[in-house]
Image (cartoon, rainbow, N blue to C red):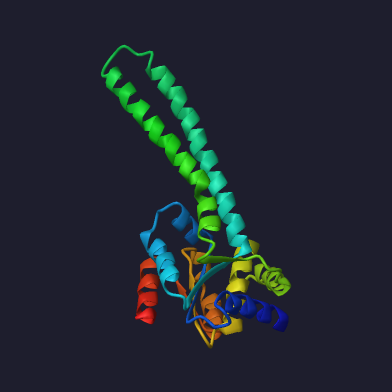
Length: 227
């Protein structure tokens, strides 16, 4: 445990030139998706704040980066399937000679172009988040054996009711809290209500971690701390 905590602490402080940052924001998979897919402006503003204020550090465990790639791939496949079905219907509609078929064809042709752009932008989202935001968003790739051990027991304990991947995230956040939670404001932002059980919130609170399920409230908390 001590070695893992030292590793996390060392990584965070080295990223901030030897100083413990005032705020450590830990995000999970759905927050990465919010940023990459542009579906929540509050999460983007949080990243902008991190870029402006050196005393703020944003990170996530490696499992979230991997899962983000997976869910994006699944989303792209789903949209491509919809696109294929769309093309089949479009092909049939073009054969009709009733109603406002010409207007429908014209509208569908425009939509197809927009749809292709959407799929391509979605495909590039992980590259944008995990590569271009790398100066602001730190992905913990360092091996943390204790994290996996903790996650194994947590995922098998019905009191937590967490799947292994979520247990990995929970264990990481708890370890971050253990490493600097009483010297820094450690905030965990997620939209996954699987992390809402009282036992989980209590254990995170005990190591100095604040948990937010609402990005707007989290953003306001960060602004207040940086004011």
